[in-house]
Image (tube, rainbow, N blue to C red):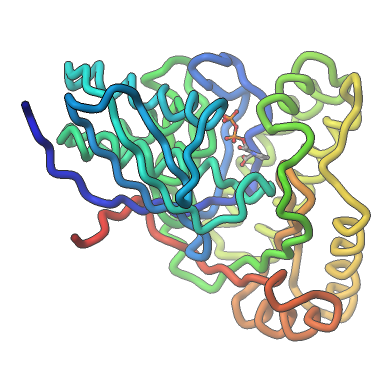
Length: 327
Ligand code: 2P0
């Protein structure tokens, strides 16, 4: 019997400023377009993986709950890939602790699958490079490819398994943060995978998304280089609204917005009128994320506390990439 020594691995969530929306290859999870994200420190997943010849099946527990179905299936994609590289056929036991409200559009799959890619390769002592870890995480969930790195990250869509990989853009060592307004932590009705494939297949607005994405990406790279909150915010807000617009053009149409999301957007517009340099973005769920300087976000959090519970308002700063936790 071979025993491996494993470590706990932590991956932080990331929020896209230029969204990944649509796959060119469903099995390899190659996206239709590049995306740019910011890794954040407030939400993360810690994962530990053991491979052992005595295990009779792969198991996954998240926060103490044994998983089956879709979650286990995604995890097995990663396990099978690392087993193939290591030439090992042992089953694995995955233990995961999620410090993210699951499936609320807060990218729990990004931190979850990135942590699993790190922990599974660590458990088999594969010594993968960050680029290889990014590719591996991508096979579990596209957005997880970006959570291997800290700060601002760009996921290059590529055209194959080897070329579709995220890379760090900027360490975000300047004053930018996000304020999460948590409006609903329940599972969403249309998963992001289903939402994006329906949109690619049927949305009359999807061609416009692809036609304008290169410009959005170029503008965002420049805005990050200039460390301009206003530019980053404006471009992120319009890119998010455009992504959500493609969903309205799908057949059947759908939206991730709730009445509460619209109310949160109105708060942002009102704050802007009062002179705050604040913008919003939204993902595949009803929650709204505000973008500004950390200083302004602290004030805004105070201001918004008359509308929301303290637990609904969570401040986040730029976070690091994949981290090995001390034993
Ligand atoms: C993003 N989202 O760029 C976009 C914006 C949601 C909206 O990536 O099918 O869980 O596993 O590759 O990564 C969420 O999609 O989807 C996502 P799969 P994933 O963050």
